Amino acid sequence: MANEVILLDFWPSMFGMRTRIALREKGVEFEYREEDLRNKSPLLLQMNPVHKKIPVLIHNGKSVNESIIQVQYIDEVWSHKNPLLPSDPYLKAQARFWADFIDKKMYDAQRKVWATKGEEQEAGKKEFIEILKTLETELGDKPYFAGDDFGYVDIALIGYYTWFPAYEKYGNFSIESECPKLIAWAKKCLERETVAKSLPDPEKVIGFVSELRKRFGLE
Amino acid sequence: MAKKEEEVKLLGFWGSPFSRRVEMALKLKGVPYEYLEQDIVDKSPLLLQLNPVYKKVPVLVHNGKVLAESHLILEYIDQTWKNNPILPQDPYEKAMAFFWAKFVDEQVGPGFFSVVKAEKGIEVAIEEAREHIMFLEKEITGKDFFGGETIGFLDMVAGSMIPFCVARGWEGIGVDMIPEEIFPELNRWIKNLLEIEIVVECIPDREKHIEHVMKIVERIKSA
Image (cartoon, rainbow over all chains, first blue to last red; front, side, top):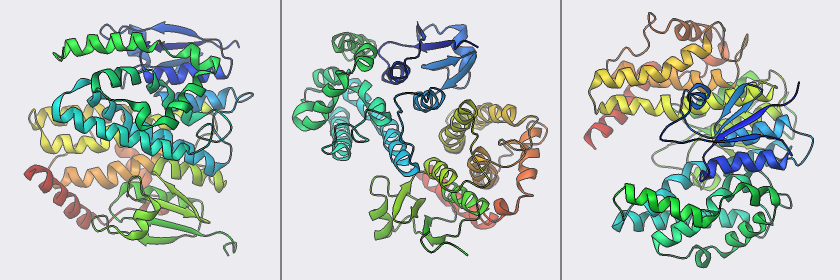
């Protein structure tokens, strides 16, 4: 049976970016469908009735939801090339731990950086930089989080990088001066075609964030 | 007799569903382990050293390798001790198990506190909580366990969290959240769980647990 893969996504979503990268790493042909999050398609609502969120991965008619679960699923289904997770149980658990850390901490912290102001924003900036520094420490001197090979944790984090210029603009700070190693890592990831093709232009992201800020009455 | 080189320690807390589910997995696999009860308020130097990121239980130490976060620990246990598998082999089924486990821990579990706060009134709170739980009712329909004919990963996650943790909270605040007439399948599943010795061994004492959860409820209400 031919593989039919559809990805319901939204272009600035750092979560959708993960799934795009994973599919490309495995050389999987997929149909990308842009969702209007203010007018969600019947397919989205049908395929993710629990959360009604993107990304939704539909593989031969069955949906897999939650980007980090999708990446592991893709790794296991298309296991013939570019393993994204280590096979050693302990190393795998470590990769899962850091991706989970990113999921638990990054979203709320980054949101405070661009969607709030005053004291709340300052607290958000501080928290955000602390999280990045923790990740930078974990990266250490390795090229990628798991070592020599691009993989799961890199995929979990890299999407946020396209939002960095927006954070810097609206948070009025420099991420590179705080976390130079992490920026170097990100630039290295972007040299991969699978990543470059899956990430939007950060200028477009700034435009998107600006629109959201207007909607929230911040501009 | 355990192999000389296998050393397994579990830092846990009697009232934590996250820690109890790890015990279920270790017991199911017949893995001998040393249990170290933790004070989760006055945290031990060992706990802080082994889990500096979250400072929480459970923490599993296997031959010096340190693991935190219960879902990951369960996956690790399943891959390391291959008897009595708890995760499905099929990638889709496995993805579903992870999805529902996340749902239990992120929506159903913390949903208890929404019911406590009942910002839109208790009836709305109960209705919203039941909407979430109804997804699980559908998932278990027609199956003895979420894992199929035997208990698996999702049974351990949902079992430790719902009937043997949050339900104590519901009882404490006087809410009959999952009556049999609305949730016949989940109630049937709970009865199935109670027939499994290793599950029963990992259920916190009911009275003590209700008291413990009600202390948390008081703290939330007075905040």
